[in-house]
Amino acid sequence: MNRRTFLATSLAAGGGGAALGAGRRRPNIVLILADDMGFSDAGCFGGEIRTPNLDRLARQGTRFTQFYNCARCCPTRASLLTGLTPHQAGVGHMIDDKGRPGYRGQLSERAVTIAEALGRSGYQTAMSGKWHLSNLAIRGKKQLDYESSEPFWRDKRSWPRQRGFDRFFGTIVGVNNFYDPFSLVEGNEVVQPGPGFYYTDAIANKAVEQMKEMGRVEQPWFSYVAFTAPHWPLHALAPDIARYDGLYRNGWDEVRRQRYERLRKMGLIRSEWKAAGRESDVKPWSEAANPEWEARRMAVYAAQIDRMDQGIGRILEQVRRSGAEEDTLVMFLSDNGGCAENVRPEWYDIPSKTRAGAAVRVGNNPAVTPGDETTFQSYGPGWANASNAPFRLYKHWVHEGGISTPLIASWRGGGVRRGAVTHEYGHVSDIMASCLEAAGAAYPAAPVTPLEGHSLLPLMRGGTRPAPTLGWEHEGNRALRQGKWKLVSRHKQPWELFDMEADRTEQRDLAAADPERVRAMAQAWAEWAGRCGVLDWDVVQRL
Image 1 (cartoon, rainbow, N blue to C red):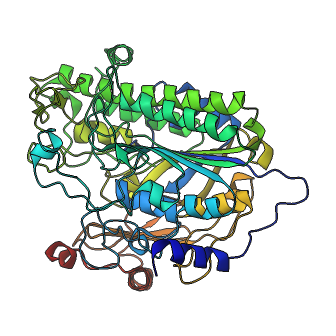
Image 2: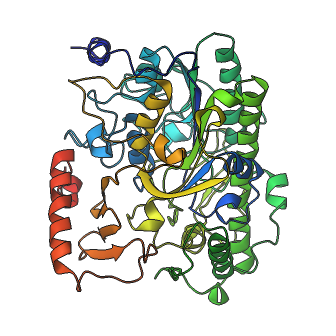
């Protein structure tokens, strides 16, 4: 059975969708995803970075303080778009095909995307931004350096237009030069950016254009806007960088301390939670060897978020101008915590020169000032530690710093509370169910994989729901959340046990004091892993 026949059959079996009630209009839905943005970067989550549009969205809606992602870019995107765990969706690790169901590196044929389900229900669908859910055929730097016309894809069957999106503009691969992104596509065709191109602006502007086009038709629409900001490389425009000149000279220790205090005052964390300290790979700021360069790195990172927020402002303004603000559900979140990676020239997805032939200086070299197209740097562990305040660890790991995302949801006409905060926990796999409930659409019946997530609308509206059991695995890092309890371990390390009501910053390991709970939760994690197709990480690496 081919994909089109399979999808038509399964969606038809799912029925016509839930009734919305007489006279009630189905909402438009805007889903905005940031890339590698830490829990406390935005102003409305305790950050010092200028994010007036996200702050306004928070005043108009509800912030989730315990919302979870899948610790890494593409696993989170797979879960977000399908309502499944990453392994169920086929992206248990990254985008290389390991030949096993949970590790095919692109969305499973048994998974249905939000766009496919909503499209079948009568919605128009559009995407602008980063896809990162397809196998690649990058065999060397010549492709990245624009010296070879060899295709970077195996086939296009897993691209957005073939997974439910009527309109698509963006990149297929995960890492990109912001001034000239590799794998830029319109529809199904590779395109070349023009002069003055900056990807963050282009993503926002194309999303606005798509919304205008869809607004001309009397059908509701779904817009998925997937920014690459603030993922490395540190590429930002000079006016935005200038806004943060000198702001970070006090260093990451002070930034983390200030964010922790603001989070407490805002009621986003409990006052009795002790902030996690520096990670083992982070030196005290007083020992930083190149403080001016370090401050510049964080200034460029902040400028990337600032520019993204400006684009979000244009998107929200288009919603307002269309007259659909009351009838639009807007959600914003990040795909994982702040990223501590130090980029290396040999990585397969980093170019060695620009399209014009200028050498790209790759790596966190203090002699190189980041910001323009000829640099490829990241902001490193010290600033990632600050971005994830007050939590432990970073992207890749499943301690709270790796998997906590700043979710904001707003829907004026849908009963979502204004200026509210919920401490109930949720997961990116819940986004699909939330969109379907808002739209009155059905999830398809078998033979597709049953929906894993549950709607967040009761929490957005000030209610409660039964606390789900959540499981994680990424590169051997494991976790399970059951109510207030979290079991977590790094790869090949012992289980740790934390009471998330008393100690969400994971400072007091209770595993030795409660071995029975550890055993029971470890068994529950093993059952979850078996059901979802998780393989031992050492086995995966050998595939």
